Structures are given as structure tokens and as C-alpha cells.
Amino acid sequence: MKLRKIKDLSIKIKLVVLIVFCLCLPFLILGTLWYEKSSDVIENNAIHSNQQLVSQVSNQLDSYFADLERSTFPLIINPLIQQFMEIDHSDQYQLFKVTQQIEKELLPNILFGRSDISGFSIISNSGVATTYGGNLARERNKKYMSDLTDSESYKNMGINVIDSVPMLTVTRKFRDTLTYQTKGMLITDLYVNEIAKIAETVKLGNAGYVWVIDSNGRIVYHPDKHKLGQDAPPAYLDNINRHYVEGFFSEKIDGQENLVVFHKSALNNWIMVSEVPIHELIVNLIGMRNMTIWIGSLLMLFVLIVVSGFSLQLTRSLSNIQRLMKKAESGDLTVKAPEHRQDEIGALNRSFNKMVSEIRRLIEVVHTSKLKEKEMEIKQRESALQAMQSQINPHFLYNTLEIINSYAILEGVLPISHMATSLASIFRYSVGYANQEVTLKEEITHVSTYFSIQKERYRYFIADITLDDTLLTQVQAVRLMIQPMIENAFIHGYEKHKLKPEYIGISDEITNDCYILRITDKGKGMPSDQMEKYNSHFLEEFIVSNEEAAEPSFHRIGLLNVHHRLRLTFGAPYGLYIEKSDKDGTIIAITLPYKMDKEDEHVYSSHS
Image (cartoon, rainbow, N blue to C red; front, side, top):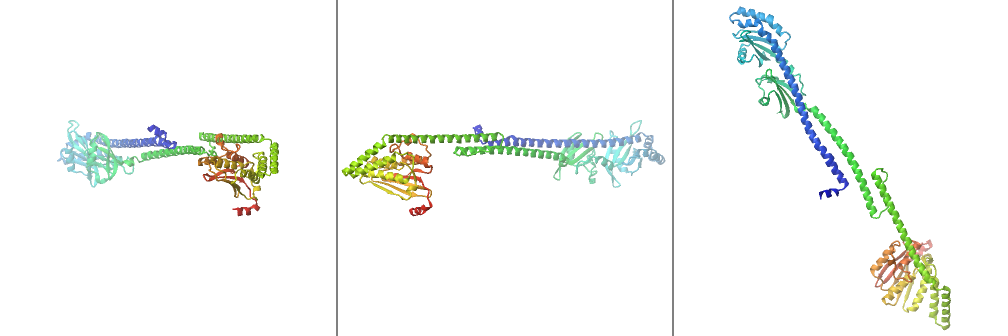
């Protein structure tokens, strides 16, 4: 049932459904999947790239501390340092002498070119200490000695503020070259600026930055100077401690989602942390993605417009040909489809025009053949009438009627004489050609003669002819046009109902372009359906069957015969029409051609 309903849809709706479900919906689904996938890929690539940068910075920092460790290694094995470690703190001379030698001979070589080192402090286990390029803080040094475990020989001690300047302190144990026992400690104070230079080699957008956490969880470097030496946020440390070496997580700060990437140094367990807003990190990639989406959407819109325009043009052409077909179905065969197109629609339109033209031609052929058929039928009837008329020798008939008239006069029987002369006049008029054009005056004269004979038969019969004699010669008619109407009135109006003919009237009416002659009787008339049947045939153009033509007639010349002869002679709208036919009588109107002259306008006005 659903498949049948889909098949019943119009082509326009089917095209819309196809475009939506086969073009728009797949594009929307694929676009959504691609958008999500591309967002994940962009974010992962950004994270991976950021991890590589942070790892490189962390490696640079490790290299820096490894180089610092290598540069201080000569101090550990140098004999002067070993000698310094053995000095008793009470031997001030020996302490001064060895200290002077270290400061002049050893430390300058180590500090040469190292602007990052603020100063050195060397402290022995016995409490003897010397400082080069910095201030010695014995309390700090004692604390460092206690913080170093036996297994640790090199350690970053974090940030200390010395003379209002943040310093990074690195400690290293001195061991005896023979016994490997700890003899003292080397304390190196470093400017934080060098670490800042390393951390700032990476530029993470406009708002991104790098900071460093030492192994104790304190901030060694941060762009915000106020955070130096403070403990790192617990949330950061918790996320970092879940990973072994490196990783990433997101942290929401001031309503903004930040991507945090970290890398833990294998050398000193320091943690390099990068922090950058996610939207800024992937803003360029998102711009490229969005541009791709816009380009794809515009292409999709263009394809949609092109396909929709083509579909609309196609359905509009089909709707137009469907509309023309409906007009042709209703009988309008003058329709014509446009033929300028050269595609299949144009070929369909041309085929439709040829079909309509052929149908119109065939209808005209059928109509012409019907006209010829009806004309032949009328001619056959006329031939039959003429054959009937020719059965009697006119000269013999006229001579016989003249003899009867002479005897009637001699015997003094005037009615017989009158009837004989009237009958002779009727026969003379009847033997003429049936379609011969005559004036209405000639027809009225013939009918008056016919009435004179009927008055001899019916004493109380009244023939009422009220016509304007001055116009009768200007009205065109055909021979034997009125007599069949009068004969039908006698036979079917009166005699068929066993009534004696009492009245037949002939009157006229003049209009601007025609003359109407009315024949009225007071018989019983005809059934209404028969009257409607006659009138429908009177309005048609000669399309009538043989059965319908076989109606009551005078010598086979009936109403339809008279109507068709008028139409053949004068054309439409001339002919017969039954205005009334009921138990009170019948009125038949005959429309005849009449062209009013200027001299007749006054007559027409007075008649109206």
C-alpha cells in the first residue's frame, strides 16, 4: 500500500523527496560526521604538536642542567677542592690561603661565559665555607645538607629570593676521591632568566604560555612572577601524577577551556607545563575547516538550485502539456504547445500538436462527410418528391382541371369551379424545384390558395394571415416552405385527435437582422419530449439519423426537411424552432433572412 501511495505522488513531489532524501539528508549526515571527526582530528593534532613542543623545551631544560652538571664536575675532583674539604675551621690561615687559590685559579675558569650563574658556595662537612659572586647563607646551606639524601649527589633545591632577586639553587655533593665519602657540598645560585628564555622559546598563540614545576611540586618558573616558589595547584598535580612521563588534560579557567600539556623530565623529575586556550590553539585549523564547510555548503546550494531549477522547469513543462491535454479533452482543439525546445519535452510538445491537428482534421473530415450524407439524404427526398410530382403529366392535369372548371361554370356550381382553379394553382407551384429561392409573397399566395380549398372542406375553419404586405417581397424564402407546416397542423394537430380544424394563424415579427414568421394552431400539440427533441435537432448542424428524420410529413416533406433546406440555402441562424406545443395548440417560428432598407426603418418602427 505504501509503495502504491508513493507511485501515485506527482512528479514534482517525487523530485522534492528525492532531492531531500538522496541529496540534502546524506550531505547533512556526512557533513555532521565529518565536522565531528575533523574537530577530533584537529584537536588531537594540536595536542600532539603541543606535546612535541613541550617535550623539546623539556629536553632543552635537561640539556641546560646537564651542561651545568658537567661544568661543575671539575670542581669536585680538583685537588684544591679536596684540600679545602680537609681544612679545620680553626686554621684561618690555611682557609684563607686555599680560598684565595680557588677564587683565583679555579672558579674564574668555570664561571667564564656563564651569565646565568649568580654565584657559588662551597661548604665542607666541618662547616668551612667560601662564597664566590654571591652571599653565603649558612642557615640555608645547613638545610640543603639535610635535604640531600645519601643516594642523591645532584639536586635542584627550588627558588630562593636573594637580595630581592629570585634565584634557582642547585646543590651537588663533594666526595673523597679515595673513600667516596661525602666531604661537603657545592651550592650554585642561578638566575631564573635563563630558564625563562628556554621556556619562552615556544609561542603558543596569543594567550598560551609555558611554566615549570620542580620535583617537589613548587613552581620554578611562571610568566606571573608572583607565583614563583609557590605550590602548583592541586588539580594540576593530581592530573599530572596520573601519568608516567607525559600527557594532557583540560582545565576550565575563568569560563575558558584550556588545554594543559605536560612533560616530566627523566633527569630531575621537573615538569614542563604548557597551557593554552583550546579555541586559540586550533583557531587556524578550525578556520580552514569552516571554510571547507562553507565551500561545500555553497557547492551543495548551487547543486540544489540547479537541480531544483531543472526539476521545476521539467515539472512546469509537464504541467503545461497536461493542462493543454485537459483543454483538448474538453473539446478545445485550437490549443498548441510551445515547440522551441529541442529536448524530449520539445519532441513531446510537437507530437502533441501533431496529434491535436490530426484529430481536428479527422473531425472536420467526419463533419464534412456527415454534411454530404445529410445533403444526399435531402436530395433523395427531393428526388422522391419530384418523382411523385412527375407521375402526373402536368399538361394532362391542367387540361382536366380546366374542363372541370368549365362544366362547373356551365352548371352554375361555383365552389367546384373555385376548387378546381385553386388546385390547378397549387399543382403549378408544386412542380417547381424544391430548393428554389422565392419571395415570401409567393409562398403566402400559394398558402392562401391551399387555405381556400380547406375552407371548402371545413365550413367553420378560420385562416388568419396578418402580415405586412409591403415587406413580403423583401423577405427570402424557399419553395414549399410553409405548406408542410400547415399540413402538419391539419393532420397532427386536429385530425389525429379527431378534431375539426378551426384555426390556423400566420403572423410576423421584424428584428434588425432577420424576419420571423410564426404559424399558430389550436390543436392538441405534441408531447414536450418530442418538442425538445425537434428543437435540439433544429439547433444542430445536420447531424440526424434516419430514424429521427422519419417523422409525420406531407408527402415525406416534414419539419426537419424544411429546416435543413433553409439551412442549406441561407445558412445559420435561419430555420425552424417550436416555441410552444401543448394541449392549447402549437406555435412554430420560421426565421428568414431580411435586410432592412433605410426606407423601411419607419415601417419597422411603427410595426414594433
